[in-house]
Image 1 (cartoon, one colour):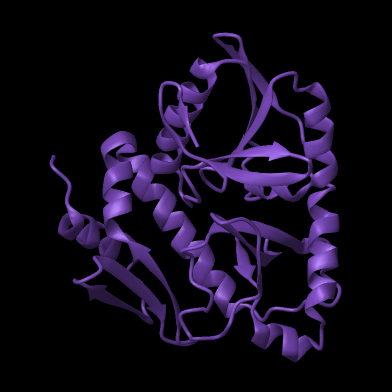
Image 2: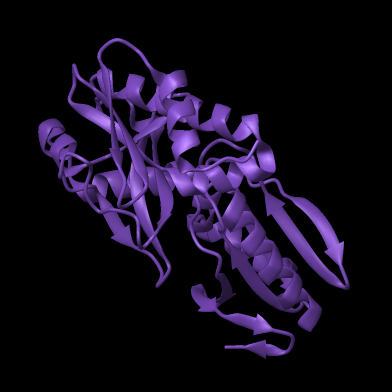
Length: 266
């Protein structure tokens, strides 16, 4: 069966149909929005990306989106509280194209990170999480610096165990715990410095999507080429894509690197 946006829209509407939900299709941007009428809040999903994943993963791609929407809408019904839930506050990495306000036009809490990435802050709700916005901050009477300090402390408590692979003399380290915060480990400065001690060549870091952190000990040009191909592949297949660009880690700084092809880097 050939899948397109209209067929995907119909399939998602069929699977997500519940009393008290409305669906709106934005033809111009090819997006489907699902709203809980009781709360007035909803989730917008981009259909072309899901169609692309369907080509590779078939039903698994749709199952993943349905799960994400169901959990997200349920979380919106439950009142959020920060007090007493400090251990549930984590940073999440997103691309700089990610919205800085919610669908309800409430400013999200975020900090700049690199030219390609931005740091948002989330309250973990077990199976999903909610991004923290200025409205919740004001309601709870919290200071934004308090959120930042707690989130960075919590991300340092997460496992940093990696899987290792060797390709043409280059060492690839993969961190993939599927807890929603794999890419967030890029904010664990002590972990990056610890990895830097192992690196004998050039240290490259990648966060192509939310559920993976890649660190590479690059020893030759093949390492750059393999990393570039890997980043593009992971970026295209990730549920929450971040950036297809890699970073060079040096002196505690992350600088984007453009890998144009064999022996061409800038």
